[in-house]
Length: 284
Ligand SMILES: *[C@@H]1O[C@H](CO)[C@@H](O)[C@H](O)[C@H]1NC(C)=O
Ligand SMILES: *[C@@H]1O[C@H](CO)[C@@H](O)[C@H](O)[C@H]1NC(C)=O
Ligand SMILES: *[C@@H]1O[C@H](CO)[C@@H](O)[C@H](O)[C@H]1NC(C)=O
Ligand SMILES: *[C@@H]1O[C@H](CO)[C@@H](O)[C@H](O)[C@H]1NC(C)=O
Image (cartoon, rainbow, N blue to C red; front, side, top):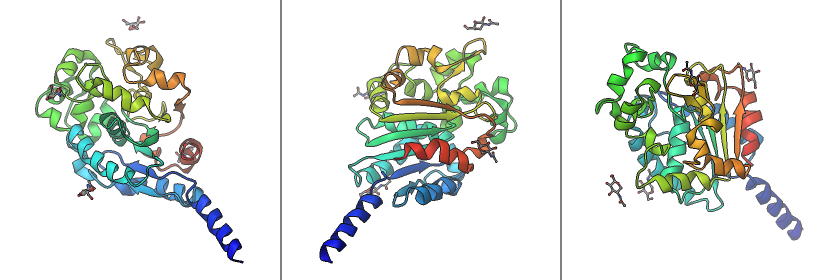
């Protein structure tokens, strides 16, 4: 009887601790409640998983400078991962997908195993749909005048606004995206590459009916060239020069690029079948 109890305890422990903990990071102008569907689905389908749903920078504070958010959330994540030497997985949605990715790069000793980017503006953002949600009075063509300024750089959106027709201004004013994508070299370039290259898996999810991330290919590191034509990841310098480790990951079969049509930006994190088909399989 005693041995039977021990056996059951052992089996229970194996089942309960089979799944790695998961960190979730919400998008712009929302908070942890927006990630509740994914959280409860993980808990239901992968019983015993510990899920950390990040609360920081919900609502208006999500518009704060990206580096400030990265720094603050990094501390919180390091407090979590220190408790889980076995490693954890991380899912970021929308702006949170870009923030989360930067957190890996800014902390190359991180213990994140798999990173899932759910429709994040990884290569930047340049589009009216998005602009007018948050800055209804701004015109697309002149938004750069605000964003590529000292004031504009205080906002998260200014930090990843990537106007293909004003690339010089982007490179000289943006304090964030050109650095984390190693378009500009800095004394952190090596660690920015290291932090991503060491992942066990990087999953980039996006799709043509997103209607907010513009171009939608930015969710997979594709972007406009200087004449406004969208160039896919594999044809861009960031991949070909392996600037941040994407090619390294691909060659090790650790980069998954997932395109799903028919999904609006505000549905990625609220659609059960997206969660079941494209998120859960990577959270083993
Ligand atoms: C991290 O843990 C330290 C020590 O327990 C604590 O002082 C600090 O407030 C925590 N930071 C965050 C962001 O949770
Ligand atoms: C890296 O560059 C930043 C900004 O130019 C500078 O403040 C910092 O001291 C440099 N760090 C090292 C280790 O050189
Ligand atoms: C835009 O750039 C692409 C790729 O560099 C090129 O193939 C295309 O001809 C260009 N289109 C125009 C209108 O200049
Ligand atoms: C949820 O996603 C599936 C594709 O995985 C799609 O067929 C379905 O229409 C989506 N539902 C909604 C409400 O967006």
